[in-house]
Image (cartoon, rainbow, N blue to C red; front, side, top):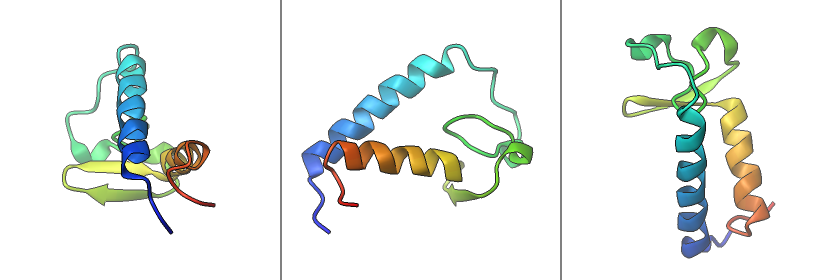
Length: 79
């Protein structure tokens, strides 16, 4: 599967901009990373079915699906 690096980087920038706008209105993140289910949408662990952990971050299954759809729509990845 070929990935267009420029399209991917553009998608990431657009996602970061949108996330930052949304987070302006979001509730503050929990102090404990253990209580956090998703670092992107800030839903607690109790509201997340599954998550992937990275270094000090987590992404939930719903955010992964949203990112996949966005990247597919922008042609950065194939179905």
